[in-house]
Length: 270
Image (tube, rainbow, N blue to C red; front, side):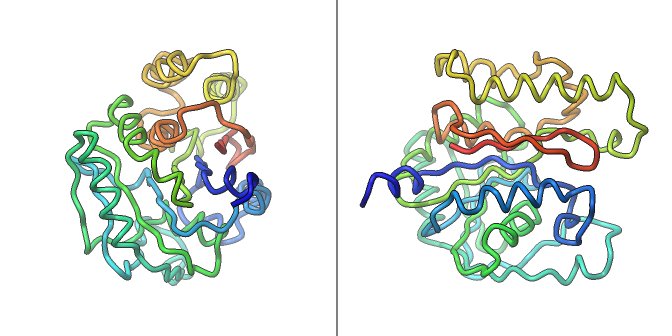
């Protein structure tokens, strides 16, 4: 194995996945996100498997899809007919699911396997753009519905060994997720709040000036960030980032900034 593949095989990616199926439907407000996917895709060596932590699945304990051929869950409403005909027949990865279950258990985290649940749009929307062939085995991991930052960082730390196995870990969320604001007139105040939180998040995730203890502490206390409650009235779209950081345990190597539906968003690659 050469040094370049060793670096890329351990990739961890947090991405802002946009609004429902809109990135796949040619929505102009998502063009920058689509461009980001095109930019980041060549930087990733094809993984042997993919683990996605989706903002759209919460359980009382970390739950892992373990079926061989998961179906798709069209967990959005009011979109064109074509959005309910999207296909992404990626195989499941029961062996990987069991390994994730065991890694969590080894860290004292009680988890659960689910061989019936399918893949929600937090998985199939970005992966249909990243790997349209749908030939890479996938596993999805839920959030914990307590939505505690520390708990999700610890989940990520428990899974750090996956980086040795050419497993691409993707946190699929959205760095800005105040749904009402996407449909409100833009104001200078709203723009400033959006941008102030983004600046804080980018600094937190990528600055080399922080020790990892300081970086983790900032992520644990993200509610204290500028305009945090405005940008995230609820934490579920940010917490996949906490899992990613737990896996990576370091500053992000690359930061991507783009606009989605009039709001600034970001993505991070380790």
